[in-house]
Image (cartoon, rainbow, N blue to C red; front, side, top):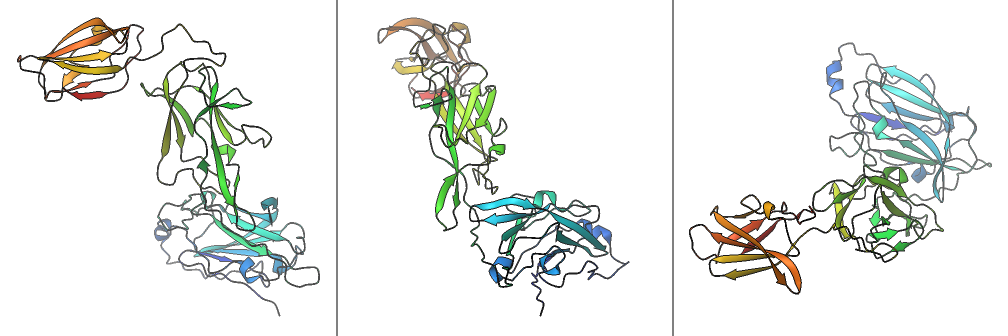
Amino acid sequence: MRRKLVFLLPVLLLLVLSVSCARKDLSPYEADTDHDAADMSTAVLNLDVTGRLIDDNVAVGTEKDDPTSWITIMFSNNMEGGNVDVHVYEYTKSGIDDEVEFTKEWDHGSFGSVLLLKPADDLDYNKNYVLKINASGTFDRYGKKLDKDGDEVGGETPDDDYLFYFVTRKSDGSDGDAIPWIEDTLTPVVSSGVRSTDGSNTFTTLYFDYRICIKIEDRTYDTTGAIIDTFIDDETVNENTVKVLDYYTGEEVSGSVTYNEDNSSSLNRYVIFKPDDDFQPDHRYILRLYADIKDEAGNKLWETDPYIDYIFTTSDQDHNGDTLEIDFRPPYIVDYQRDGVYGKIYFSEPIDHNTVGPATIYATSGMQLTYQVGEVMYNGKLVSVVFVSRVDGNNIAGTTVRITGAIKDLAGNLKGCLNTHTF
């Protein structure tokens, strides 16, 4: 007696994996000339399954002309003019393997379409297979994509993709040995801090003339259900998902991005950023990792945030221990003092007096201030100090001021950050 396994797929898409009496002329739809096409255009393809072939362990045929080896996908939407991105792969204990070619035969009706998949060649005995429907490339004639999770945003990977598993019968006709499947829902992880690299080794000292790197690896399950670490999808690691920004100006640092998949390398599973020019010494940067970095199953690096920033500061030395004479360091505030009507703001070095004024130092209350700038010795070093006072002549105590990042040192380096202080 032939058997047919049918999955009831509610709402708008039906999938029938037919392991026996599928027919090329199958057409369960009747014409309805009164159907309003506009209603169909507002529909979103959707499906859910009540089981999987691998769970039921149905003995699937192996011969390409045997109807028990055919797969039938039934859509309640008319797919003529649309597309179905569907593939069949071998499935081993190591995971998804080589793709298996299937031919497609369509039967379109007024209320839907039927896609019949037939293996181009005989399938192997006692072999596990997986059918994958990629939601991003599957849509009806009106462009509506699969929406498995029902969030009204179709075509998302892996949220809206579908995987169905089946195993062929043994040569003696008995049921095949199904390989247990554990769905990979684990996200990739960042498993190191920011380091520098010469291309062969990593260093905790962030030499300004070296590249920077950070380790990102995927967590997934092996066939026993144990969690293991492996590679992420290297195609998702690029200049759009990995960026380096100047911490003070927000300007993007130009460079190239790669991902190392060499198990014998100390850089294995590291994302590497190589700047077009050397980093500035003793300078602060932001390494920004976007959520679109994914593993092979499509799980994103971050589930809720669009990106995460990692702040790092380069060393003032190159890998040989040498320093540059060029001043790249931004000025910063080292101390605040109050002296009667005056508030004193001490900087780390001499600053450009022309960058001090109401636009760069101001009272949060709106009170007008006066400014005087001079140089003094502070902790054995020549630095600038800004004296601020209230125009009304009252004591500066209790006055809150803000110092913007637009103040520069004599080399033109911007202070960069915003400071607030109450005297």
